[in-house]
Image 1 (spheres, helix red, strand yellow):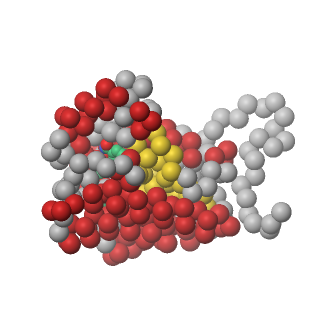
Image 2 (spheres, rainbow, N blue to C red):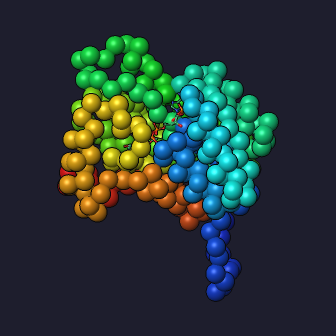
Length: 270
Ligand SMILES: NC(=O)c1ccc[n+]([C@@H]2O[C@H](COP(=O)([O-])OP(=O)(O)OC[C@H]3O[C@@H](n4cnc5c(N)ncnc54)[C@H](OP(=O)(O)O)[C@@H]3O)[C@@H](O)[C@H]2O)c1
C-alpha cells in the first residue's frame, strides 16, 4: 500500500443504496468541443451535470451554438478560441479556464486538423502542423491542466483513431500523430497516477462528422466500414462520447494508459 491519493470507491459503505452516476460540479475542457465528436462529448458530460469549456479555432458561430445547447442542461458553458497547435494558444486557453473556473477536473484532448496526403507528398510544414495539433497539443494541455486538477480527481482523455496502427490512404501524417498521442497517453498515465489523474485514450473507426469531407476517398471509406462493421453501421459521435463519459466515472480509474477502441468491431474484421 502506498501513500498515494486515490479517489474513494463511491459505493463503499453505501450498502444497498442506488447511486446515480453524476458529474455535477465537475469542470471539463474539451479541445475542439464545438463540432462533431467534441460537441457530442460536451453534450454527454453536460447532461450529467459537468460545466464545460468549449475550445474551437475557426468557427465561432458553431462554438456559441454548442455552448447554448450545453447551458440548456443547466450547467455553465463558455467558449474559448485558441489554437492548441501553438504553445501561445494553449497558454491563452488555460488562462481563460483559470479565469472562468479556477480549476479543472476533466481534459478531453480532441481537436484535430491534419493534412491528408500520401506520405511521399507530405511537406515538412504539413508534417509539423499535423503533429503539433494532433500530437503535441496533448502534452502542452496536460502540462497546463494538471496543476488545475490539484486536490481533485483529474481525468484526461485523448481521442485517437485506428490510423495510429493501421494504414489508411492519405492518413500518414494524422496516423503518425495519433501514434504519438497513444504513446504519450501511456507515459502520462504512469507519471500522473500518483497525482490522482487518470489518463487514457479512446480510439474510433469511421465516425460520421464533417472531418470526413476532405478525404478524397470518403465514399469508399464509409462504404467499406458500413459493410464490414459487425454492428452494421459507421460510428456516431455519441458512440465515442459515451466511452469518454465512462472514463470520467470513479469506477473507471483502474484503467490506466489504455487506448480503448470503440469502433463497433470494425477493426476486428475490417
Ligand atoms: N470523424 C472520424 O471519423 C474520426 C474517427 C476517429 C477519431 N476521430 C478523432 O476525433 C476527434 C474529433 O474529430 P471530428 O471528426 O469531430 O472533427 P471535426 O468535426 O472536424 O471537428 C474538429 C474540431 O476541432 C477544432 N479544431 C481544429 N483544429 C483546432 C486547433 N488547432 N485548435 C483548437 N481547435 C481546433 C474545430 O474547431 P473549428 O471548427 O472552430 O475550427 C472543431 O471543433 C479528432 O481527434 C479526430 O482525429 C475522428
